[in-house]
Image 1 (cartoon, rainbow, N blue to C red):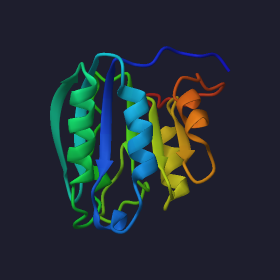
Image 2 (tube, helix red, strand yellow; image 1 turned 180 degrees about the vertical axis):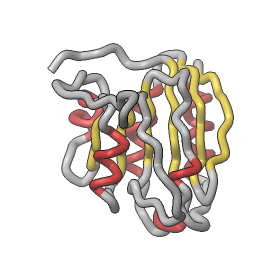
Image 3 (spheres, helix red, strand yellow; image 1 turned 135 degrees about the vertical axis):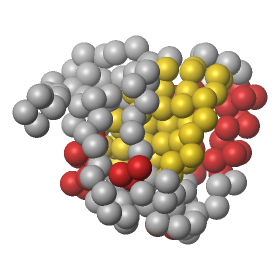
Image 4 (cartoon, rainbow, N blue to C red; image 1 turned 180 degrees about the horizontal axis):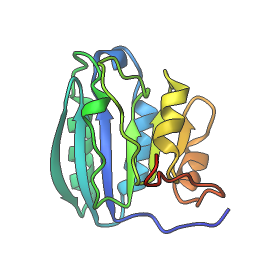
Length: 168
């Protein structure tokens, strides 16, 4: 597969719902750390529970990356998962969704037009994960892939991409 440069405008969606309680998220944090270090990244950070709380960040140093990782590690799992309340940042070149792809609140989950990479130690809803990743992203199961494989796949251009048309 063709390789693409690492995006400089990304959205990170961090699942902090109750389904992540007791899950070791070390591997997810390591992926994010390696993905962000050593370059400048404009980021939309979303923390997902019943709704999504977002903020914009600019990360330009390893110290800022460390602060972000500490903040995410300190997020306490709580509540349901309202994935339908999330809409991809249209300015992002890629979305890194760290979570099990389970949505527990009703609502339609839109089809993002941005490549979404679903990254988790345990994918709870593989069908939803594939749905989210269909526009050029991938489902990256950390229990089946090494850190190096995940980082490489974040730069691969998939052979097949599905985009919604006006009749979808």
